[in-house]
Length: 88
Image (tube, rainbow, N blue to C red; front, side, top):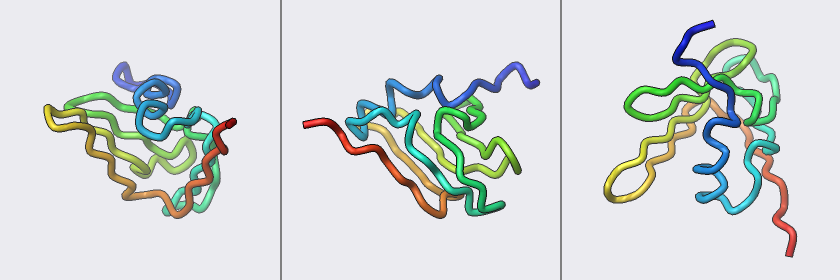
């Protein structure tokens, strides 16, 4: 295991601030291998930002970069994202 790798729970607070729901439970289908997995199970690598990788094929699924103007989110490797509905 790489010392820079965490799991998807490492970015739970940041994702919840952006999406207002518990994103660790959101299901993301990898555009590379087609396998669905919860965001909380992704492999997260931290550098200048965060790269969330598929736990199966290691493709980059999501990128998060915090800057002065806000958070930039990219979805280069997510074919489908199913998010939980927030309780009203």
